[in-house]
Length: 211
Image 1 (cartoon, one colour):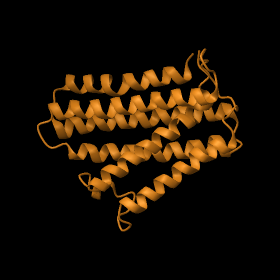
Image 2 (cartoon, rainbow, N blue to C red; image 1 turned 180 degrees about the vertical axis):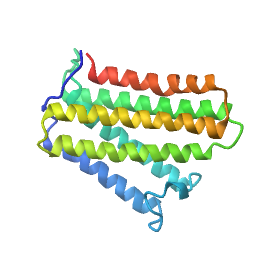
Image 3 (cartoon, one colour; image 1 turned 60 degrees about the vertical axis):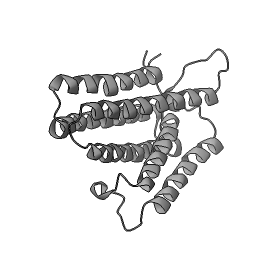
Image 4 (cartoon, one colour; image 1 turned 90 degrees about the vertical axis):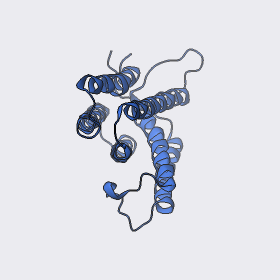
């Protein structure tokens, strides 16, 4: 059964700590690791082989992994027999999102590296581009969920439509990138998309929105 949103939250202090702390970490890392003269939105000029960029990408992934469970928490109503609290539900979501990211990013890149006939540096740059877009979207959704008076049933549709739209856009780009840049047979493209992108995403949606 599809779940709906409820306004039973962790408490203002906890939400503020996670949300504002994540933003502070993200901004601080950007200012320290990436030169100020480089625009945040000029992704094509980013040096993906630079150690500072690698560390910054890792921090972006960590912040994204913190904010997405916070964004999904109001929709996650599963009960756990051993200890049923919102803290446990948040930690379960954190672990699920972390596993999803590790699987889709690491396994997907290994798959492309094995089959690619040329350098796939551009793949890492584009992966970061989508990570950044999803991170900004997660920040926006967390803000409207916890800091605006928008009604819960509207938030439900905003969150699920935004999440699915971002996924579909990323998958469309991945197919375009694979076809244009890596030149692998079509059945490998379908295998990659279904195994490393769509299936993990459906599992995550099933865990959160369906009981």
